[in-house]
Length: 345
Length: 277
Image 1 (tube, rainbow over the protein chains, first blue to last red):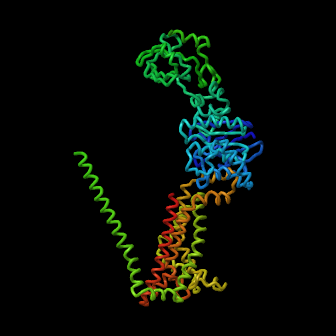
Image 2 (cartoon, each protein chain N blue to C red):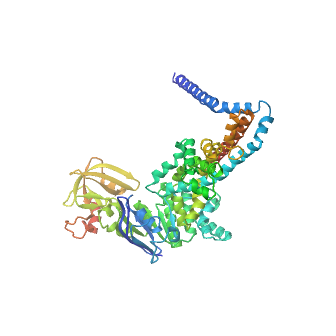
Image 3 (cartoon, rainbow over the protein chains, first blue to last red):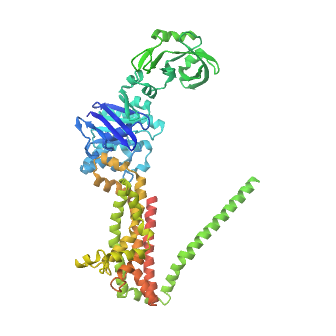
């Protein structure tokens, strides 16, 4: 069931949460709404579920305008950041809630609930209360509860936001796999670009109530439409009008016409990756992402002078030589990029 | 040296803790426990028979029944009203909310006598706003049960609202929204999700309402006329027996009232313990 939102507007008092937002979510896809807090992503998701009424625009699920339909008739599964577990019900009763509302008979409910509890790996915990579960278990219970009624679409509002890093990572892998099995059209909201790229096939980047860009993770990373998307989907350095990813910054020891001089301020080793922070002569602070091997080859020390060569940069300034915004300017050919490295060997 | 000073510190902590305890318990003993104990001893100073006779007299029995009738009518009505009102106050943001909120507190702020007087003016058959019309329809409000019920409802109205509002605010709306995404309509959501979540707050309010209705004196005195064997509740019975210097009746009925109050308070504590568990 594809979902589309057309020209959605929503204000809370003076604050415009959604400003003429349109998105297309293909049938069976797993789409992430990505953006900082206050960008309108949660409001958009809640509007799709009918938990917020739009001031203007419409929501279509499977080519049907559901804008006037109340939440309980939209057949959406919704998972909340803070689980929204029914605290006075057991895990079993929580998962079976929607089925009981639909007046299924007890034996059928029991079969379905146990099937779902197996799916979310909570089989042994049917009789527990939510207060006796860990955060991750509660969220899996909430997911089972949403899936029990076989919703047309599954909506997840920052589902892993309240969990610690390890559980978060496990759950998102697991969600990805679950989606591969169930093929239910899924939208999930997150402010974490890594999580969005890891889980979702399709991303919609939002900012200040507008859609900045949508596409696959690769498209957004390689061809960001603007400065906001570029800096939101990955790390970025600003060199004048140019934006350069830290891994597109080459550090060399000899100057040439394309390099800029900088002083190494700090070297941080993060496992395989090394973060080299430099200050340019005009005071700009930038950093380059190197491998351990590269660092060892260069023998960089804090306080030393080194030269930076952007391998690939982007400019979103209309007055820049490249007319089209978001144009990618390869500053070194592929060969040149590779050739740049042995310079220090 | 340091351990010695630490010990003396602990010692002074214990001293101040004990003096606080004695102060608190002494206050309670003097102001709350002593009067109740005295009632108990005074009631039975000439044996069990005199107070028992007074309480089981037709007027005594009638007063007890009437008091319980007030509870049976006023408490359910105020419970339903209180829950509905709390839901409206918390879940539906109206501009008039602040006004409604303070109006609901009126019975707390007003002296019950004033409430009784206001009801009297409203329902008096002699020039009251509603009195003559209702009298023509054959409904006597003043000096009969309907007026007393109105007075009881009025004075005990805020308890369920006040106890329910904070619980509703605390549980938030997410559980209710989750229920609606699972297909529950507003009614199903209320019965299956909201009400179970606020049940201890409501129960607490019900207990307080019951205690208040049982003990109500001021407002009921005025609207009932305190006619023995007809419109006399237990507190009115106590007052009248006391005025007649019929001590066994006054103390005996007081003891019954105290026991009823104690039972409701005990019920409240049991509920609270269950809630905490």
